[in-house]
Image (tube, rainbow, N blue to C red; front, side):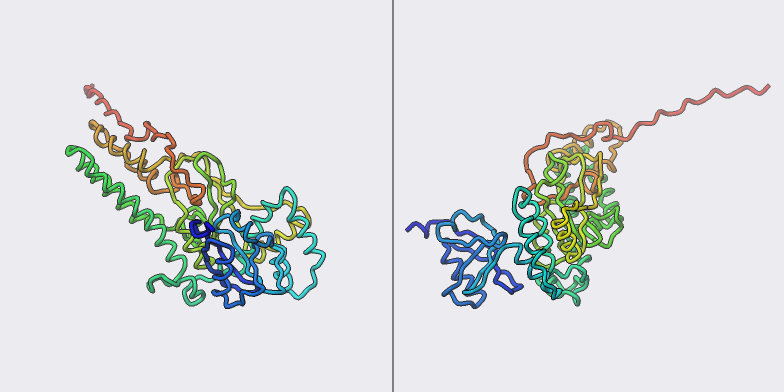
Length: 383
């Protein structure tokens, strides 16, 4: 009766043995089912919906409790879906070998107290099986470039542009603050912004942060293109283990644009290395069956403070210029806080907290150390 007043729920919908997924919104189970059958050109009679993760079938009553953005599988008469175990089964059958024992072992290990974490790891890896991650050029992976200008010929080039655009937006914010500085200090402020701009051009706006082909110490991803969320500002790492590879497919490329490269506080950041999808998936099978420890490489940058740009860094720079009283502002310090990984943290949108972090710039580094003039020694009389 009140269905028309409900807010539509959104889902990702796939059909069995289909690679394409659709976004579907509906106020009721029947509406989502009807739209799904339309997209996949399947008969409504005998069709049903179930959760991708565990195969639970939806009903009209259960529909309202399913979270938004859940992934659903559309089944027709006679088809079954058992969740992740079904994907394992299909994957192993690609090798044309009977794996009933392994399937049963995986089913047991994907239940119990540790099931949620294992399911999360497995879901991330299964998602990459169909990706064309190794492809780099437009000719090798045309779908990845859909919607992009023709000038972008390779994936790394576009992601470098994406990172550069973010850094340029930070520079525009700094430049815009010149109008709020007093008239006496404005010339010095503009001069400092000019110095920062020249350094950014020399560093190519740190666009290498998103380039998987860059040197290890100048990128934020693995050589395969995996990025890991570094967690909210008040924790050491991401408890949800968010990770993404925007090099994999168009959907991941678009989703990566919602990740934040922000000036926030954190004692360190970590990068979780990932392997090629199929190899990693097999490694996970061994972990589940043999109960071995799932290993990951980590890269730690300790001792860096993440200080907020808008609330702290820019106002402190403005004040430093206005109150310099003959001292020279250490613009390189502010540059590192505004534009480099010393004070930038990559976070998933769900881990991005927009509250004030209450951290200030280091007062010892705002101005350059003043050098004392050397005293002249009195001239010695010739004997």
